[in-house]
Amino acid sequence: MRDDGTLDDHSGHGGSADRSDDVSSTVRSTGLPEPANPQPLSPESRPTRVGDRVNPRAARSGRARLAVAASAVCCLGLIGFSQVGAGAISDLVAPVSAQEIAQRTAADAASRGMARQAPIPAIPSADPTDTPTADPVVTSSPTAQPTPTAKPKPKPKPKPKPKPKPKPKPTRIAPVAGLDQDQMDNATTIVRTGRAMGVPRRGLIIAVATAMQESELYNYASGVLTESLNYPHQAVGWDHDSVGLFQQRPSSGWGEVGDLMRPAYATQQFLNALLQIPGWDYMALTDAAQAVQVSAFPWAYAQHEDRATQVVDAILG
Image (cartoon, helix red, strand yellow):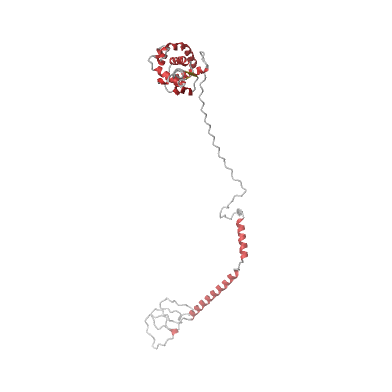
């Protein structure tokens, strides 16, 4: 005999689901013989298993009916709760008018336009048992002064390059030997040009004495060669096309008119011709000058030797 309050195992072997103890099974797995006078069984008292198989048509007991009823009650309760909750929520959500929406929008815009204030740092608790979870964030005050930084040192200005000193102008040598300043300047040009060419002192004296005889140390133009009048000159002569300090003729191959009118160029032409004469530095001054000039008065140059020597010595210092 089993207590009716004990639920059967639906999947156990030889067990019955929801069967009362007073109903005997007609088929047993043990193979015992059936009773002599079997009684017809009602559908409710039919065996629940046939050879350990569940009979799907077995009648449900009162406990099964109770479980079905309980499930139905739960479903009805859920449906009622959902309806009541929906009504409560709809009651909480009140309609909002358009004017209230506009007021809220204006308030939100105004709050966004306001300057935001820095949060106030949290004050740590005085209780030593309190364990801080994070370090308090300290924000800088708007009035806090920035930390002064060291100003970079200005780069030193570059020193201006010294201006090149102008070359000293050649001093104007005072006239000697009865010459005026123009004559002394022309004699100075002859001596300095010869020094630049490497001509020795004897050659410089011959050149100055020759210019004294030919032009009196003045830069001559020619009235016959009118082109020479276009260049700086100090006097005008009429001896054919002879021009300059040494009265050199362009027609004889001494050079162009414009070049021969320059005292330095005329001196170079004379000294180059003198240096080509063999033994010129051992000749008498008049012979050396005549060898270059081929003058009609070859002895005339000798009279200027002393004065030419005085002028050259004054210029060379």
